[in-house]
Length: 71
Image (cartoon, rainbow, N blue to C red; front, side, top):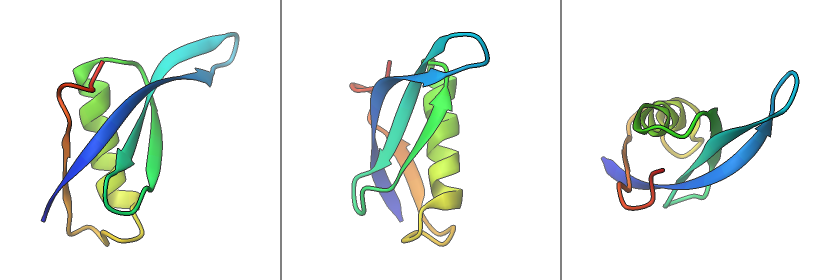
């Protein structure tokens, strides 16, 4: 099933400083994952991680990143 995922820019703690990052969230259940970086590739990585980790998905969902909200 194709599920829309929202993307929000956040800051994550790195080893020496905060790093611009993304939080990718399932629009159905609200589960989210954090990924370092703000590129389109980072957003896609977050979508893959969400598919693997979302408790509602069990690996069956395909997450589509909302391109308008992607950094």
